[in-house]
Amino acid sequence: MQGPDDPDATAVFAAVERRPSRPLPPLPPLRSGGRHAAAAGGTQTFTRPPEFVRPPVPSTRAVPPAPPVPASRPVPAAVPSPPLVAVPPPPPTHCRCGAEPIGTCEECSLPVCAEHSTLWRGWRVCDRDLAEGRERSRRAAEEEERRVTAAAAAAKAEAERLRNTPLDLTPEQALELLYVQDPRTEQEVRSAVHVLRRVPSARFTKLCRAVLPHVSRRTRNRGFFRRSGWAFAGEHYHDRSWFLSRGGTWYRSGSYGESGAEQGYSGRKVRLDDTEKRAIIYDMAWQQERNGFLP
Ligand SMILES: [Zn+2]
Ligand SMILES: [Zn+2]
Image 1 (cartoon, rainbow, N blue to C red):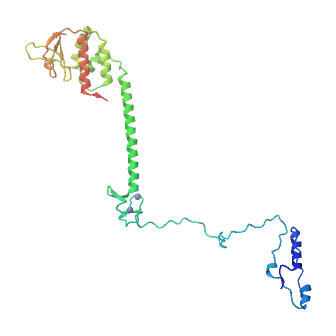
Image 2 (tube, helix red, strand yellow; image 1 turned 60 degrees about the vertical axis):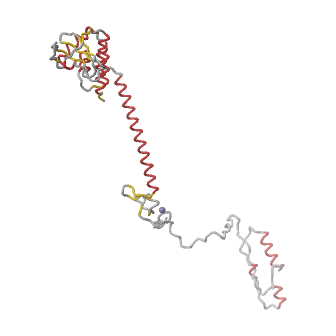
């Protein structure tokens, strides 16, 4: 029985391993067994046991041996596998909590149970989409509020700018603006006040007598004095009203609201000084403001 202790075989392999870069010469055919075979009778053929059949030594070190394949690595199939396609999982048949669905969400089309869905304006919507929708509408409302606030701030700034920009009015235009009870802008009223304040009181009477006949009907009273002229009166005058006669005489009455000046009731005669004139302008402007300014 031949084994690894066979001195001849060991010598051959030792020689091979000492010269690894050189091609291994083919082993001589071991016919008829050499001296062992001869010793055994010469007819027995010698066969190398399988443990001595070594793989051929590579002829050069330039080609490194292939790394050992780990046992766990899958062996590639001979037939190339088709490219990986994401196969969608089958659509769920139950609500995500596992309960029997009572419908499908109109948003995400998933089956939903009663606990995890709500009827929203007749549509069944899952709780997640409902929360998302609420969050969206909350953000939209906030955005709208910001927009409205910004627009209001811009409008206010513009109104403030107009308010503080006096119009270039003549005293005649200013008096008509204040006296005639038509809708006015705050800018018009403030500009008119600004212009009329600079008109001296003596000239103010002349101005009224020149302008009022063209912009207002005269008031005629049917009372004892039969005066005719123009009333400076209104609901929002401060418990006083004035009456300017056609002849240029000022009267003041002290009643509130419907003072009577509207019907020609004139009260007592007053001299129009700067204080009186300022009060008339102030009350005309106040009446216009109480009527409401145009935007
Ligand atoms: Zn949904
Ligand atoms: Zn559920």
